[in-house]
Image 1 (spheres, rainbow, N blue to C red):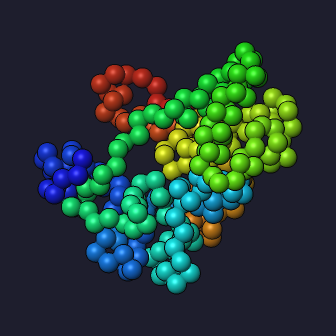
Image 2: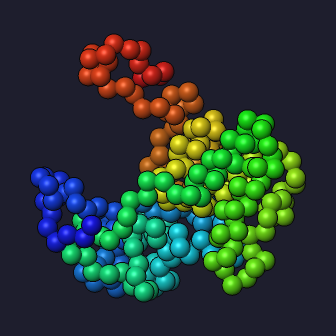
Image 3: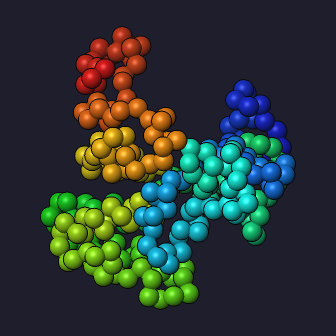
Length: 250
């Protein structure tokens, strides 16, 4: 909820808001007192994942003007984009916050499209029904299609991205749809780990994402170790309290 008081992490004020809106707003001088910290940049790789005409792109990724992109703080790690799903824009502008940590954004615990795509994935991977998987996928795409003035955008599977009517291409379609529909909502990492492809995507030298990221971003990346970095280490205190094996590689 929006609340004018805060304590930056101490006491009860912190529990009544979120730092998301101010942290993910771009650091643009044109925003005046309402500018933010510019964290959680969408990448060019994510931007390019959206199909032509997908109305979700403009609702997911904000693009500063060419003049605004000249700022070093806006072009952080080689990306000028900002997260539209968290920074919050109202009627074409960034509303003033009653406090840096206060923004009128609800927390997304679960969305219907997430559930539909989970169902589509389960129907496919269990071998239960390709038809059910396609129908659930189409429900998500049809909703996004209705947001556009062009009824030809986001055609039903398999009529896009060179996909054919096979189980392998249906898997590609579902994974693509999860990425664009749920972009910047905190699902991507867990999807990659569940699919067993985190290393082949994230590795800075050989991953389909890592090796193609900006030089500025790659300079901040560490090497990805398959079989280790899919999990965090278990804290030593937890192992002392409840003896268990440490996760592999730590």
